[in-house]
Length: 129
Image 1 (spheres, helix red, strand yellow):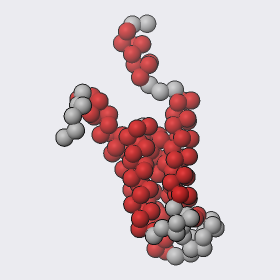
Image 2 (cartoon, rainbow, N blue to C red):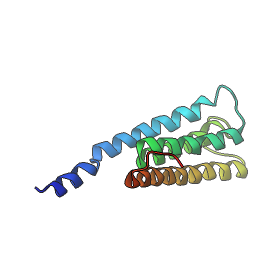
Image 3 (cartoon, rainbow, N blue to C red):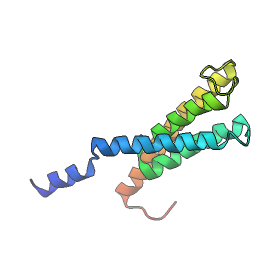
Image 4 (cartoon, one colour):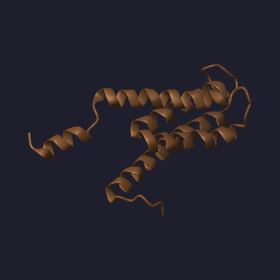
């Protein structure tokens, strides 16, 4: 095996690594969504916080971790923060739209953060611009 083949084999993550990152993302997204429950925080604040957490998770853990955090955060938001609380159904159409928006924005934010992080790595940037 040449050094080029060894380098490419080392850079591609294994399935166990991908699953581990996804599970950690689920834990992070769940923890953040549930952290707002006791405080009865406004839905608008949570709708901003969950995609930000997904982006930060993707920045440090990769695309899989960020997407999993976004999905878990949106699912738990729909379960715990919409009427009726702690039921799998969402009564108001506006809450359904907000939950879907959190999911879509969270996944897009995690993808953009991961792409930006990889681009900085390719360019060798260490200085923030």
